[in-house]
Length: 387
Ligand code: SF4
Image (cartoon, rainbow, N blue to C red; front, side, top):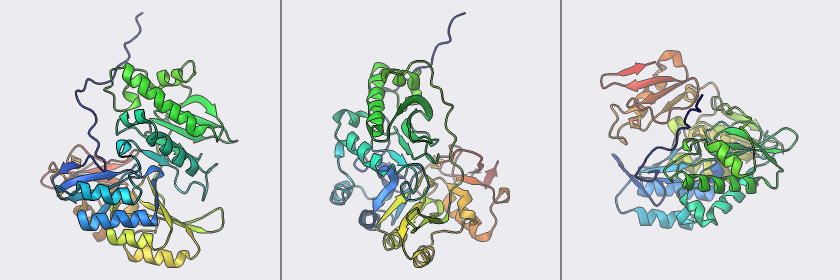
């Protein structure tokens, strides 16, 4: 019996079109810039710089992404140089050549609460490794590195290469979300994932250079693992996607408090960003398009400042169950202003599907739909189809 052919990468004539801070994209509401924030870790000063840029150059808000990055929308044509200068001055553009490839997602509150290790040093090491490797600038903008401290919140986030701390201390290399079977110690872990990225680039070139993700390569995870010395099939099943987003107070290991805030529809206004920056020296953007505000000695005052600005700390709030695509006016394809309609339904207590976890979309593409059990609320031009 013949062996079935392994599908190869799609035939494409262009590189991926992911926006960056320098490579902005035209949208229906102006240009869009995506600023990479490795690990979602932002100092208060950098958050303020982003908020000022959004207020003075964009539409006044920061759009948070499920990879812990930040988008500025509504930029006028010709503001790219001004934006790049501001980001560079704030330290948010350490290597212009690597602008689009610093996609690193890390466990939320790692090193502060929960988890089996602190992976913040890995974030810095992996980002530095990427930015000092000229070849890494060739990575597709969609390539994602996940650094999971053992709690399982980002291992299933669809990463191409990643690390996951295992009970007892060894670290597993994950490829396309699956355990590769390769192991190392904590100190060696950044080097192992950087080696996996290098092996991906080798395999990517060997298969024609058109793939945007590791999973698009023919037998990609196994071949990349093989280039690193693994033999046989990958042993692990794909990691499960993280559950619904958390919210509220978290007791840190050092006795202080973190607040995990839901940002309604992932849109952080400049005023909300200023409120966040006013209560903590560093924050972490989350894969749920929210923000974790750690190291608080006076959590009650901080909570009042955040909720006063419109952020949500109540784990019972309907905002934990509602996501939406860009919709009008940002997307020309949209049949409705889905964010306004979703916000109105939350305010009126009239969410469809009994308020179940739901994603509102302006067309059938359903951009930004979270993984897992989610009801679709899709604009039809004459209302919404729920199902
Ligand atoms: S789901 Fe449709 S309307 Fe919404 S952002 Fe995507 S393409 Fe635009």
